[in-house]
Image (cartoon, rainbow, N blue to C red; front, side, top):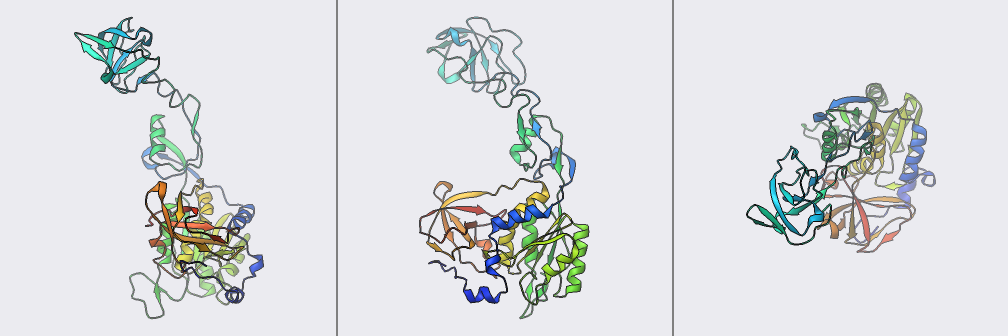
Length: 423
């Protein structure tokens, strides 16, 4: 593919893989087809206390019930005055305490001490910072004219009554918790975390606490997939590892489809004798397999299906391919199942090396970000689908869609950050 060592797919490999290459869709079109046919069930709603709302997707619109702040407040430590009387000398008439009104109207020629955040008294419309005045024998000397509203946070400047602050589908983070608390939302309606069943398949897989033989590998996929799903807002349910046995795999998929809100399976999606996943999913319910195979690298043998309104995602068995497709393609499906708006975290950067790829295909190139955000550099990493450590060395990935054939070193790109982790 390029100078950095990402290998070009050969026509021979594509032909022997068994896919009709001409019929494969790029990821964007595949997702469009998927959502038009899947008819996914609407996520369920539950009410949780504010202390348990972090990381959940809102299921209600949040609007301000009143103006915030309710009254004008000082933006500085200083003296509250009437701006029209400046410049001049002002008698210090008292001091405002935090959390309490002054209790009197400021008379002409008077000033009151006020802390940052203190409520302005009646008769005052500006604040002079403490460093801009001179205090002499109970009086404040303001040497220059002060405009009305100076160093004042107006009433309603943060939120207006009735103004929508948070929309359904927004994931609640620290800032959202602050808004909810300000508005007195001790409890909030959120979408229930979808239970997503995770199944690994393959006779070569052994549990992580076992020593694999020469032809075996530890089942790392399920843990990589489970961690990413949890970061996407899912409640993960581990199902047993499925051998390369159609009856056993069918039984596990039936159990998962009956007891979970969605299913993610790795392995068994390639075309050939081990092409188990698509054939079995077709028997479980409608509409069945919607997409089998993507015009993409890595992750061509991907299955996007739905069974009676529940998403079933068949990922490739190779570790890097499986995790990349979950992050780059399946994430919007998981977001829809969780009731969350899909918003990937994207960083602007410049390539450190030139990239070349097969025309007409979409490639997801893992990349490591280096440097500060404003001048970040994206170092492409060699795509090796079977690598377990590849994506742990990457910060995210660069998407080269079907319209791109090459990019020179120094070209601006967007790096989509992984949900969690990443270098």
